Amino acid sequence: MSLNTFFQYFVPKEERFYPLFKQQAENFVKASSALRKMLHTQDETQLETLKKEIKHCETEGDQVLNRIYALLGSAVLTPFDRSDVHELAERIDNLLDRLDDCGNILYTRKFHEFDNAVVTMADNIYFACQSLQQIIELLPSLNTGKGREIARVCNEVKTIEHECDEIYGSYISDLFSQKLTLVEIVKRKDLIQVLENTANSTKYISDRVRSLQAKSS
Image (cartoon, rainbow, N blue to C red; front, side, top):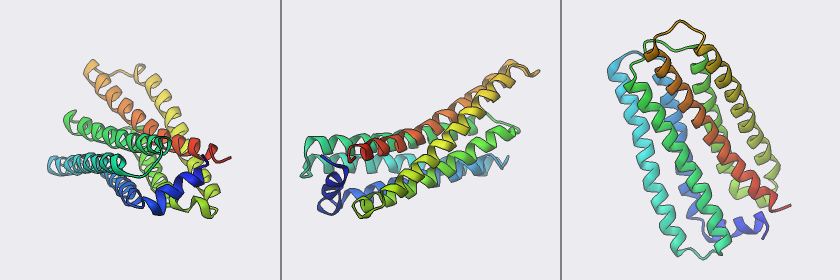
């Protein structure tokens, strides 16, 4: 079945899916924005507020995921189509989970300062989330010639994730050559690792969309 045929089921026959995915996109953009802000404050109250904002997005995301599951159980879709919707929903949920992990580490590890590499990673995650939001907004327009635009934005996400890979590799290499306490090394390693995992999650979503595109060729 072609991807266009798939989204003919997706929209408008089962147009209820689209608002749910759009809501998830709003959640991960809000969460990634709050993550960036956490790197620019040392105020305990503000850090807690931002952490709770990320957690709220993740919890709301779980509720949306449950609604997607419930809709999948009653939607008039073939098993092939249902599987695709399910996997895309799961990958988006994983991204929200990773963003929540970032918020927890930033709040609980009590960092006093952040390297430029960490700030850049958080910025890149936010930019990737914005690109993913564009992709989700374009999905219903695949059968009107928006496929190339989706591919272009997917490539943006891939480029951002690749830059995060480079930052992560350099950061880990430099980390163990600095004169830091073991506690500080572990704290920084935990943070850069969870940021890397989050960046990877953005690419997993765009990869899934690209694989769906390949089915239409």
